[in-house]
Length: 281
Figure: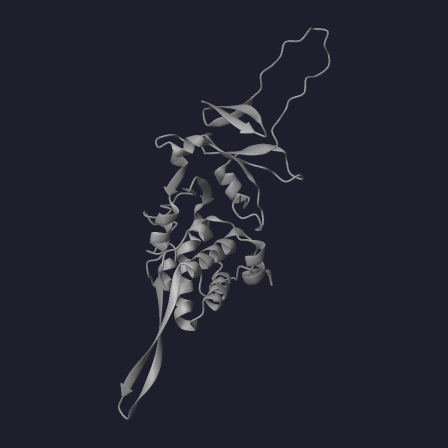
């Protein structure tokens, strides 16, 4: 199988055979007297493939890194590289995405669990107990059949993501709503959601905190900001009657009011990071 990959205005031909992918370079015939070696124009890119060698996407390495590599998605994940949060650690720019990933039945398509932002929202707005977000429980989007379904990567809106990154969204939305009901203030709820994400960094009660600048904290903040724009806090006063008298109690209700998915789709801005990025303090 041959795949044409356009990088920096140049089309490169990659050949996949027996689970291995190689860059094909056309040779030129020169006179026998020509002793000057012909240079090979290698792309300044890392090509990411499936285990079977199918090209999936390409990212731009840092200047201090090897300029050209062909590696599997599993290898990239092990190196903690990401391409969707520019202000987070280990960011590399996404410079090519295999168009075949949009065609059902293709090898590239099968590398991902495919979702829309709306399908993720529909999962995230369901009220759940906090413990349900533990691994393999109903709130664990990564493993849920209606979520990541155990895939390493998901395709959302035409962009690939690590499944565990998108898996932070339902936890964050549910946690935001919980703190809104408790505190009655959206900004305070955003901050408490981020702090809770830090405290539950390894997913265990009393476990190790995650104050890293990695993508999981960014995705929690993304989702909390989205939740703030797509929910309303409604406060009502009720009179509670008891033996010997009565008193007024404020009832706080958090209501889903769909507005836009933009906050989920866009990376965290420097302004939002400065305001809510508690892991950097």
